[in-house]
Amino acid sequence: MNVLMLLADSAQVSDGKLYILGGGWTLTGPYPAPQALAIKFIVDSHELNVAHHWEVVLEDADGRPIIIDTPEGPQPVEVRGDFQAGEPEGALPGTPVDVPIAINFGPLPLAPGSRYVWRAVIDGMTPPGGTSAFSTRPLSE
Image 1 (cartoon, helix red, strand yellow):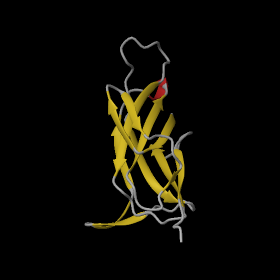
Image 2 (cartoon, helix red, strand yellow):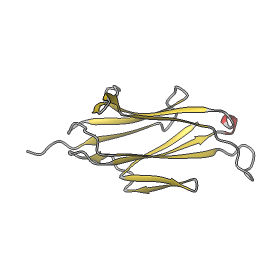
Image 3 (cartoon, helix red, strand yellow):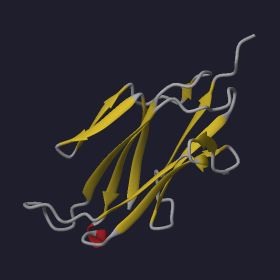
């Protein structure tokens, strides 16, 4: 399985397609701003009709999960779910199947002048294309 992951201002899925607004950035801030992840899991034919578990976690430059304060206490910035892709009707045998996912976040309290990585993990492994890095601008004096 491969992943295509793009940072955006906003994203949504409709009719099996990703709709992306303000996509492809790698620099934000320094102040908190909304952000989205547009994700396409590319499921190979031998992985069809199998249940898959996925997670997306925000990490710092050293690979540590980012923890933010929430009403339920400190929590990592992460989203998880499950999917199972089947062979679409009319697809040629061996054709990979796309599973699009859009995740939108409100403004995240990230440190200015820092580097971050969104990491996708599928069935316990980060597949090719499974990371998307970005930086926050430093505060100007």
